[in-house]
Amino acid sequence: MKQQIRLSSLLIILCFFGVNGQLKTAVDSLSVQIGAQLNYTLQVKADSTDQVLFPSRTSFLPFEILEEFPVDTLKAKSHYLFTKKYALIQFDSGRYWLSRQPVIFNQQTLLSDSIQIEVRDVVVDTLKQKLYDIKPLIEVERNYDQFLRNLLWAVFLLVLGLGAIFSYFKWQQEKAKKTKKRPPFDQAIHDLKSLENQTPSNQEEYKMYYSELTDIVRRYLEEEAKIDALESTSDELLQKLMLLQDTGKITLQTDTLKNLDRVLSTADLVKFARSLPDYGVASLDRNLVEEVVIDTQKGLPEPTFEEMQQKAAYQKFVRQQRRKKQLRVVGWSSLGLLTVSLLTAILLYGYYPVRDTLLGYPTKVLENKSWVTSMYGMPPLKITTPEVLKRVESIDPKAFKHFVMGTPDTDFFLALKFIENEPQTEQSTEESAAPNTASEEQVQALLDQTIQAYQALGATNILMNSEVVTTASGLPALKIFGTLAYPRKGEKDRIRNKYTSLIFDFKEGKIELTLMYAKDDRYGGAIEKRILDSVELIQQL
Image (cartoon, rainbow, N blue to C red):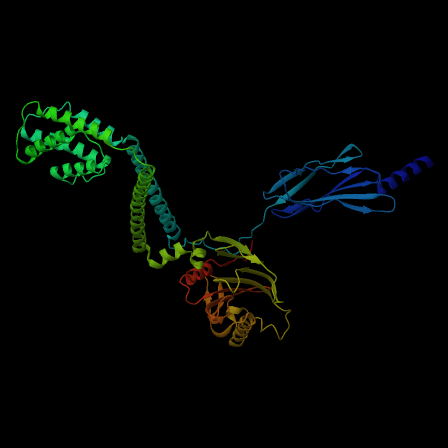
């Protein structure tokens, strides 16, 4: 009997103090609401020499891990407690089992207990909960600015592409011409050979034949002998050749000049006197011209080094002039297409939208951005803005949350503050009435606070009005608006700005939404309207 009592006492002590290597599993609740956080804890009791390893890759499916906390080590008198915590969440209602998790203790695997968790739905009492009609669709003006900018860039790139393609093919054509172009002597012989197969039979055919025959020899002499052969008469051409021969710049046989004189005379009679040569004369004259070309080629002196340099320089100059001409054609064509595109866009959308889109007018760029719809603060305020609002530390001691977009020195400034009410007393109950239902004295107090806030920023010459308005979502608010002079950084003179403040009421305080932009800004008003129309206070999640 005494042994049984001692054994029972020992078991009670061991259960109370625990045994090294024992794994305990705990959750803060067996029933949680859908979307609520569930805390899951694994704890192992061990000595300082024991090795405890919690799982590095953990899965709690179908639960998701919100956060995994580092291992917490607590030192007791005679042992250590190693604790690992996880924050879990589930977005579907039902009953789920948390799977067993392995923990390594001195190279042994310990498994945690599996626990069943109930995830409850949110119960909605339709008798107490207000029901609202489905909000109608809001028609908004279609924004063509981004489309316009893309269209203009597309036209510009298309013009550049067409210009590049045109230049490439033109360059290929010129290259092909240069490749196919023969030296003057070879070209003349080639052209004369093509006349061998021609047999003129009437006066018109003879005229065309001799015109082509004389053009071949004239073109050759102009290119090789460097004389104005194409623009000279027959007598002038012979005199120029004789002058070259007398000065020693060319050496021709006596028969060469006679043969050329004979051919030119026959050609003049055929072309101008409508004469018909005898049969076989045309073929004979072609052979004479070929001899003239061959003899001239032999009689030309070898070009000097200076002449070769001059010829290369001239050819380079000709290429440059041709390239400049091509660039002018491409440039004027591109400019014409671009001008037509700009004029068309201006006629469709207006001068300022087109100009400001191309030049990147700051508020136009802001308006053309992909706007973001998000919720801020508690209670959540749903709002659509060009950029995500950034949370900052507020200088206002009453504001417990403060979000901004830009600064008062930027082209468009937005501030969203959540202000907590002061503790209520009998005297302050009346003073903290809702902004949209406040008395004249209370509204004046709000106006004074707003003026002081702008003065703290450095604003002067503040003009202010107020009215009670209802937003597009049906939310009543006190609207404070007007103009002020603000000293922007980098500006010599103060900028006249428009500002608008909307003050909303909620149970624990009020929400203040402030917008400010230059008075003469062309797009600030449209941005302001779009932002204010999107404001919606989420009363209950």
